[in-house]
Length: 297
Length: 273
Image (tube, rainbow over all chains, first blue to last red; front, top):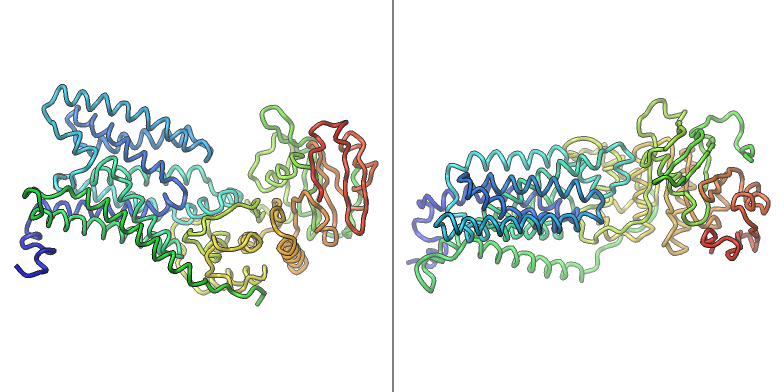
C-alpha cells in the first residue's frame, strides 16, 4: 500500500455510504458555517447550542411516531426558536428564556427516549440521535437537505445588510426604520434550519461543533463580515470532508475493524481549528497593528 | 418660560415638538414638552441622571413612541427617517469581523436587502464621511479595535453618511478621557458649521460644550426649558424646574449646578464635574 493510501483509502469514492455522507455533510456544513458566523457575532451561541440539544426531543418523538428524524429535529427547533424569540424579547432575558425552554424540552426528550426503550427494540436510537450518524443518513433525504440549506442561505443572503446593521448597532438600525425584531425572527428561522441540520449530521448534542467551531474561527480570523461568512462555510465544509475521510480510514485502526464515529472527528477538528486559529491570532496580535494617522483628507 | 432664539428669525425650523408626553408603565418620563429648534442650531440637552434627556432624544429619533403629542421635521419634506442617531457608548468585541468602513457603509445602505457589492462610488462616500470626522485613514481598521473616542466618531460618520436633517447624539462624551471628549466636541461642532447641520447632543456635563452650543434644553423630572445657557442656567429658572433650591456657581468659565440633596432625596442625584 502506498503511503497516501493510508489517508486516501482505496475504494473510498466508490462507497455509496461515503457518497451520501459527503453530499449530506457538505449541504449541512455550508448552511451551518455561514449562519454560524452571525450566531457568533450576535452572541447567540447558547441559543444555537440549545437548538441542537432540543433536537433530541423532536428526533425521539419522530422515532416514536415512525417519521423521519429530520422532521422531528426541525419541529423541535421551530417550537424552541419560536418560544425563545417570544419569551426573550430583551437580550438580557434571552439566555434565561433559552435555558428554561431547553430544560423543559430535554425533559420531554427523557420521556420520549424512555418510551422508545419500552415500545421499540431500537437500542441504538438514543446514540444515533445524540451523537449523530452521518454514514446512516438516508439518500432519500437529499432533496430535503438541498431545499433546507438553500432556504437557510437564501434567508441569510436576503437579510444580509439589515441583519448586519441590527447586529452591529441595533438602535441605529431601528432609527433608520429597520424592523430589528422581524430581522431577528427571520434569522432565527435560518438558525433553526442550520442547527437542526447539524444535529442530524453530527448529533443533537454535538451540533455546536459544526455550527459554532468553524464560524468562531472564521469570525476571529477575518476582517470583513462577508469574508467571515465565506470562510465559516469553507471551514465547516473542510471539517466535514476531513472528518468523513478520517472516519473511513479509522476502519483499519484499532481496536476492531468497525470505524470510529465520524462525529468524533468532526468535533476534534472543530476544536483543533479553533485552537490553532487562536494561536495564529495571538501571533498576529503580537505584531503590532499599524494604527493610521488621525486627521482629515 | 420659553425665550427667543439667538438664531435669526428668518431661518427655518428643523424640529417642532408639540405637547410631547412619554409614559413608561403609568409614570410620566416626559410631559408637556414644547420645543422648536431652528435649522443649523447646536443644542445641548442637559440635566441630571434620570431626568428624561435620553428619552427625549430617543423619541425624536423614533426609537420611543410618544404617548401623546407630535414631533415634526419641517425641513425633511416627508422623508421617513430624517435623523442620524448616534447611540450611547457601547463596546464592540475586538475580534468582530467588522471594519470602520463596514459600520459607515451600514449607515449608507444598511436598510436595503442583500449584499452591498463593492463599488467605487460607495467607497468614496464612506471615505468622505470618515474624513469629516478626522478618521480618513481608518476605513479598513477593525471596528472593535478603535478607541472609545474613535468609535464614537465612526458612529457619527455612520450617521452623517445618510445625509440626515438632524444629528442626534446620546451622551457622546461619557466615559471618554478629556482629550478624546474635546476631539468629539470639535468634530461635531465643525460638522454642524460646515454642513449647517442641526445638532441635538445629550450630556450630563455642559462645560465641554459651553463654547459651541447655541441653546440648551434643560431637562429635570420630565419637564424642559429651552434657551441660551445664560438664560436657562440661572438660579430662579432652575429653582422652578427642580422644584427646590439649587445654587448656580460660575467658576473660571465653568458652570456648576449644586442641588440641595437633603431637601430632595434622590432627585438631586445628578453629577456635574
